[in-house]
Image (cartoon, rainbow, N blue to C red; front, side, top):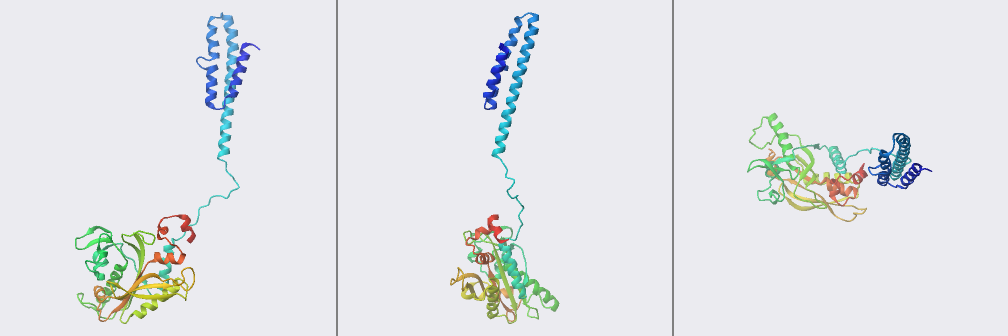
Length: 356
């Protein structure tokens, strides 16, 4: 074996020992670099005769080509080994089921709102909707709420730009303002039809007002059972002889239908609300299940205060009725056994998909 054959063999052996592309480049430099062994042979031919240059030069070129071929072969081998390593690390099991796009569904609170609307709709109640940015008059004053009431405090209510100093705008704290708005429009139509004076409470003939107002409301409150944004559903029934007896019957029938339980018991505890008199808190108790025997508050109610009836444009000497309010979020928690209100608003698909 001549010196050039030995050089090619040495290059091949060194290339074969290279475990990484960096190692291979270092090995290449020993043979084909600026100071490599092949480069030195090329430089050494300057001292040879013309005939020797031809013979020696051709032989050195053949050796160089063989070394470059061995280098490229090793590069390809290392690249293939790296590719196989990546494929192994990122292997795909084609027998696994594919990822499918899931079907959407209504939010559990939306399901509850639809259920509430359907039940009260079967009792002849209309569904009204109104602005979430409300003025002070409809949200507080028209509902007989005094100026020094805590609910008017900045600590309890989100006030927003707009309105005036005496009539600021705010994010509604309940949906009761829409009861007044709906009643005012209802009375206005019949007042105009009867040709009654606009500046006097209306005491003429008029169909009953029967309406529920579901929607979003806002208060400065946040914990496991309260949220700054939450849902309410207010109800109103105004007529000539609507009593507390009718209120108890309507709400009892609603609760038993909503929870699909005839064993459900309701309790009306005396309370105070500025817009009703007398007023009561509504508690329910289940006869069976995990909540059996416990009283749970689900709403408030009462006879509509005469001042509120008057603010609706009606004569409280002739027209009377009841109002109630409940939290669909609380009803949803009870219906589905959820103990943290915040889960409804976290947007966790794993939680929400249970209600599809």
